[in-house]
Image (tube, rainbow, N blue to C red; front, side, top):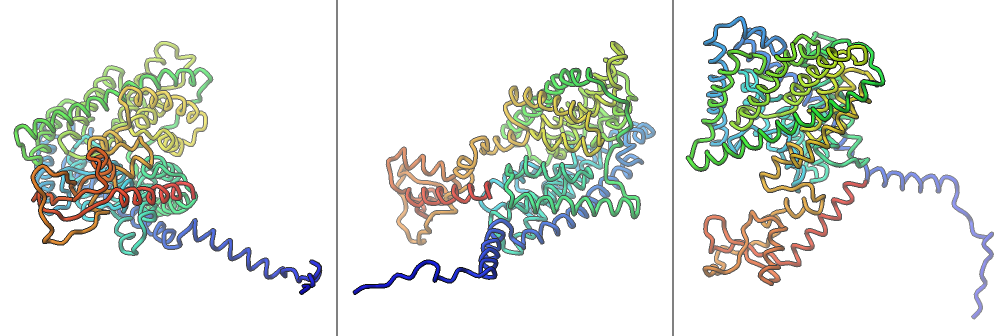
Length: 561
């Protein structure tokens, strides 16, 4: 049977309207893959709520500071000098006692189970987990405790608690809307970006901080919502600034003179100094935290008793140098204006590093960004003042170097050279100074990372058993737990014999695979945490590998779409 084939010209081509509809369907599918409308709506809402939360948080610190010392954070040192010695000493001591009591209550209520204030590292840990969850109750309790600690004079930062607050708000909304783990992690970045943007009136830096530090991801589907949240928070803060004169920023940036070619060279040497300062702080704080942890375990000390010890230390130092109290914004401003002598700058730098290390180790507050800003401003001001004495005709004034140092030290401590550079740029609007800052930040970060081994946040995570340096594949093996993937066993399952191989529900997926390999088993029972012989689940090597492969594919899609 012969079939007549019609020439191609007799086939009717697609009309223009058909092609347009087909293109629109494809475009809609691509857009839905990249952008979830719920995420965009919640991103704007997170920016709105986090900005108001930052205003309340900052206002609480200001109120407590005025109550304790008679002045707000901008004039804390000046206000403390006008007080009698007893009040200067008692304010941080009483603050430490109340903070310890609140931490104890929060632990008993299981809001802060580790009896410590939380910060950026906890948000990064939540992002690394499958669900991207930050407890809302922990966020609220942490904000209240941090307000009291900072207001009573704890030498710590406010940006860490602010980022955790943004993460708690984002988690509450993502849980309410039933979002996936990927979208919940995106909203964590939105909360962090909004908190940083509201703190510094720096929307670009807020976006880069969230992408660089929290998410470690620059995918297009993430960038848009994070930027929207950061912009929304900035608009809210600026509205209150212009409407009622509210100012949430801690220090003032003075006008400084022009710079020259030589200042870029001098900035490189300042970067070396800032790297050494950052390393000194990181190393001292790490040693102090490990020492305190050993003593707490050895002597069975109640952790809630640690903040009063830090309060006593702060009170003793503040009797002579009240500049170290609180976030240190007055001393930072004075350093930027060149108001301190070189000997005083040196003393303040050493004392602030010591007090911050003690407060962080004794759980009297959290957050290191403000400390990094203080260390950098003091170091840069001392360096600039020295250059002014030696070669005044070649160097810029001390304010220029104080701004450079401020970004270099904080960037090296946080491991966030891009976002800290942009924060300083948005504070100053000086392109030439930013070039020198980038040079100094790069050198300081290289020195701090080479000597200490990691940023402060990644060191904290390392103490909890997480190593994020291994990339997505390593994070997946560390963060997925056996309890998340095991098959439940009936209550009457046969108990295990003593010495039989077993897993715990808290073991990571990587640990489970390693134990199955070591015992040459295709699967292992999961024992109860309290009764080591009671079987509550079972996991096979095939199931573990399937979960790992699926998570690895999802991570790749999340990082590249």
